[in-house]
Length: 386
Image 1 (tube, rainbow, N blue to C red):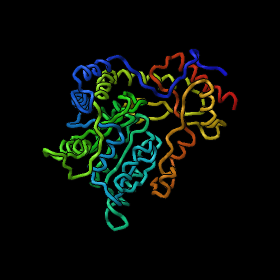
Image 2 (cartoon, rainbow, N blue to C red):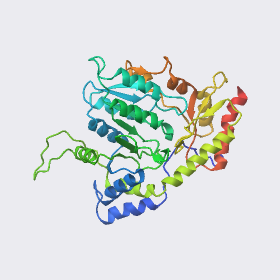
Image 3 (cartoon, rainbow, N blue to C red):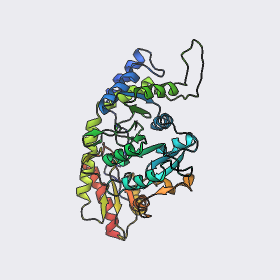
């Protein structure tokens, strides 16, 4: 079976190091700040908060930890309802369960593959606190899918009108903007991720950001085992071992220097796919005209009745040493969340339809244009057989 020209695997999205990372890591070794915390952590928090345009931040071991602390800051407790993006990775919504809350999943709109404002409005009216069976929603938890911003004007207006705080999961969308404003800066609390497949990475890690400096201070307290200011180890609350290490933060500082170049390379990949796949019965993942995605992953949905299934394309890619994957399986279809409420417009299931017809293509920024042309040829070959 034909492989890529160099015989190497083309990845979905793998880490890309530049050497600047080592400079900050070496500083941690030279000063013996190899344990958690230190100058790299402090500066990484400051630099990313400045980039997003928010007042305060706390660097943590993962984006999931950041969402967990945001959920706690929003006051979510046993029985509380949180209105969540349905089409996302499970890490977005699992922290609601950590605090005993209940997820209500909101369908996507087809224009952005993100939370549908019309469905959100239905859910906010349903959970308005008017009756014991209709408790007021404690928070809205939104994810920007595959690096494309959600329709933030409408969503923010709805949250403000109903007095419900927004938690913004920008794990996939760091550097993406909506009307010129960075994702992760719209919500009461925003989170980003530095997992190995993200647009920049620290190998693992995340950050919680907000203009609520007092809230960030509280999250920092929880993240360092909730140790009281006493001369001995004293704890009045349950805490967590969630703080980022100084070495990991050094990787992040080096990566942050390259963030905008990574975004430009991701956009070039998306544009080459859009041009190279023209004429096939498929569509690229869409984005709103008032937004500028970071194009983290380039995805396609296959037209109904085209005779080709996502599994056919994925098998062809894998046989040629190219990594693809299905779109995120919506949360309301996940066994662990069976029975959770799902809110959509007119009884539809846009996310379920996208999942059934969609897949992610290799989007690694180290992939050359020639290698990407081989991915395009592989995709095209699937339709020649149909």
